[in-house]
Image (cartoon, rainbow over all chains, first blue to last red; front, side, top):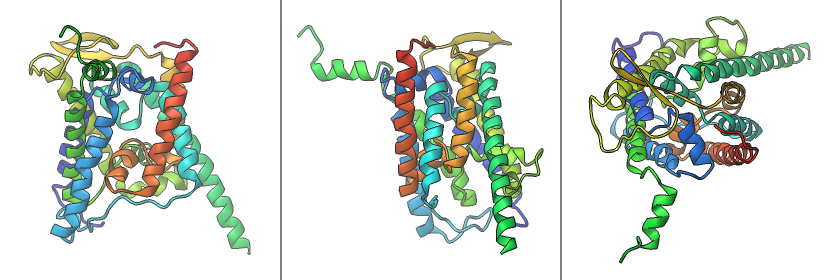
Length: 152
Length: 185
């Protein structure tokens, strides 16, 4: 990705706007409503997540048949497929404890800030700290592995 | 017929706020994802922003791998924040009225310059410590509710389905235990 189309960032911005408006409208930007779902007091949340997944899924299925590449990047249209390993379960479980404790996930936290929720800065500070800690630790272990591999 | 039929009663217990606001919100979240995907081919998730933004201040290799995408991820997040603010300034402020919006009993509403804003009652220590685990878990687990939950599930990715099943189950268990311990909100 050397040269980006001038409309690349404006489109990402507009997509973010719609995405954030949707998170506000669905009340997912309110941790209380997420906690109400997790405590089985209001089962609305799956309609947000799976509703969004269905809409996205239609585009992921159709676009590769309509065009070869995306107009603003030249990227091929592909689905979001990541390799499975133990990290998916370990990380998912750690995320689950955090989500269940706080009622907030990354996208909803950004949106929550937009609705005026200054208290959510605690969650955002925590997320950056957590992301930093795991990144620092994993960078070290990767570097160590590379050093060992080089020593062979 | 005085009482509601049983199915209706059950529905109002399970869905005290109906399902429309959730479905419409989800539709919009999906639409935002689709706009970006059609234009760029990128199935965008929200949690990579945490690491890509750290690449501005840290030279660790984990963060530096996201240098190429860190600028547009900032733009994406700015869009999410502003989009939610537009929601607050229109629907939440009553400028645009929707039968799907009710102020509700969660958190506190307050006004600044004619805009109705909202803030949570969930205790800061829950947000902070929960946030730390969200930051660690989403990055180790290769995605969050948008990356795995929306884009991955939309891709019928088995990895994402396993990820979603894991964090959903653990989150439900955690929230139930925390509530049972009497922590509220």
